[in-house]
Every structure is written in C-alpha cells, then in structure tokens.
Image (cartoon, rainbow, N blue to C red; front, side, top):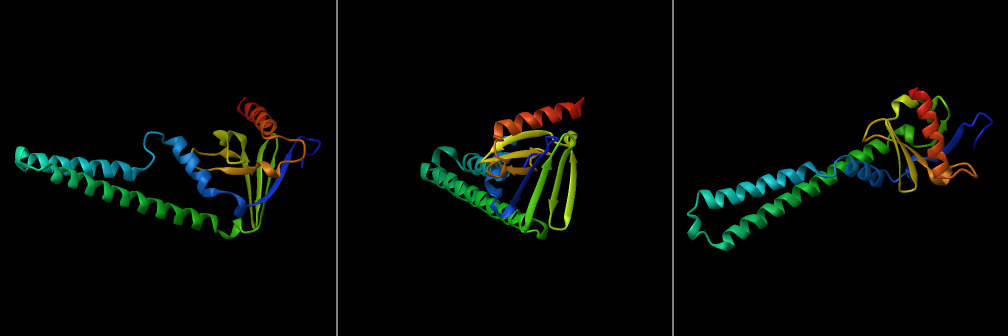
Length: 180
C-alpha cells in the first residue's frame, strides 16, 4: 500500500522468506575470494600433508600413491569441514528465523525517514543513514544495515503498480536526502 505521503507499506510472513538463499547470496557477495573459512583450513591441511610426505620422507622413494593418498585424505577431511560448517550455519539460521517475533505477520513501512518494522510484540525504527546498501536477490529487495544483515521486502508484497525498480528508485531518493 502507498499513501499520499509516498510511504510504502508491505506485510509478509518471515516463514516465506528464503533466508538460507538470501544469506548465502550476501555471504558470497561479501567474500568472493573466501566463500568459507573451512576451505582455508582444508587447503592448509593439504599443504602440510604434502610437506610432510616430501620433507620427512625420502622424496625419491615416496611412491606417488602415498602422495596421492595423502592429498585425497586431506580433501576428504576438508570436505568434512565444509559439510560440518554448512550444517552448523543452517542450524544457526533456523534458530534465528524461528524466533517468536518472526512467527506472525511482519509489517514494514518505508518512508522518507526510514523503516518502521512491526513484528509480533516488537517494533523497530531504522533511519536511512543506517542502511549501508540496497540489493535485489531471489524476488526480494534487501535493505542492509551491515554487509550480512538485512530487512527483506518481498517483491510479491509490493503495492499494485510499484515495481522493484520503482522501489529502488524511491529508496535511493530517500537515502540521498537522508545523507545530505
């Protein structure tokens, strides 16, 4: 809904927000070179396996199978680290998104001042100066107070006649005025 002041109001349920996909998008956007800290651990582990096999053993006598086996073992352990990290990340996201205030309807009003967010039993006001970036992903406009946190605005909940591009233009105008 849009009122005469130009405020935009949306309502949605957090259960419909693809948190894992959006969080993954933001994580990979913020760390293109290091998608996972466990990948670095796996690489270090592989390096030490190779170093051990060449340094402490007589390198000419070390069979290629031993080196390949060490590298394969390191890759398996690295993959295990990655899977464990992904499992823990999913558990953390599930706990965050299962919070009681996200159980019901969420309302967000965007206007020239900022965001007014209403959850079950919780009210927030966020000034536009606190929003560091605005991006689109998976059918949502994400208002980012930090590179990894976001307030989602589902595109399918936008008022009639307002496109995601129109929303971005309006937000850009409000943010520019707030920064001045």
